[in-house]
Length: 257
Image (cartoon, rainbow, N blue to C red; front, side, top):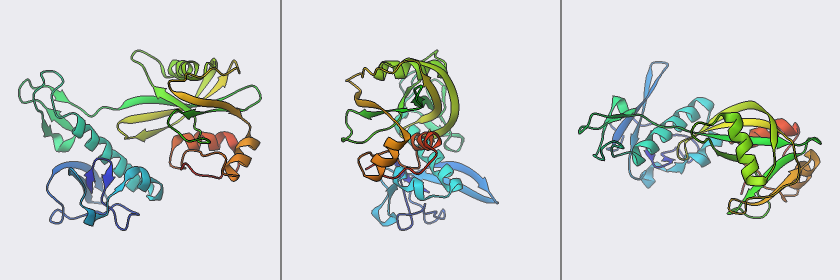
C-alpha cells in the first residue's frame, strides 16, 4: 500500500493498489500484519504519484471490503501519526522510526513514542417522545445534520463526556447513557465511541461558536426530509449514520454532500 497523507494508491479509484517490494516507491515502511501467509505493509510518501490513482480513504472507505478497510484505516492512522510526531516531546530532538513503523525512538534521550489515539464520544440523544436530537455545524450548508460529538477530557468518564458535550453544545441535560459501538477514525487520530442517551430536558440553547442549528426530529421527519433532499446526513460508512439507522429502523435516503 502506498500512503500520502490520507490518500492511498488505488486500482481505478475503487480499491487499494497493492504493489510488490520492487514496484513500491521509496519511503518509510509500516508493517501491517500477515494474513493467509501474505505479509502486508505500507510505504509512506509525501504525495502518492498520479499514476497510482490516489484517492482519500474517506472516499474509498464505503467501497472497500471490511478486511481491506481495516488495513487501510490502520495504515493511514499510523502514517498520520508519523507525519505529526517527528520530534521528541521530551527534548525536542528528531526521532527515528523503529519497530516496523509502530514506534518512534529519540536517539538523544531514549524516549519511546507510540501511536496515539484520541477518544471522542458521538451520541444520538432522544427525548421522551423518542425524537432524535441532531445538530448542524457552523461550516455546514443548510440542511446538513449529524449527531453531536466531542473529545473526551482528561480525567473524564465516557458517560460524563456525553453529558458534558450535549450540555455545552445545545443546552440539553442528559440522564441515562448507553454504549452502542465504536469506530476508528484516523482523520487524524480518533476513536469514535458511540452512545445513545436520554434527554432530561427539551429546550435547546445552542453554543453559537460551534453549532449553527439544532433540532428535534421524528422518524417521519427524517424519512420525508431525506427523501426530498431537504436533509443531508452522514455517509453510510460513519458511526453517526449507523446510530441514526439503529434509532430510525427504516429506510433513510439522501447523502452527505
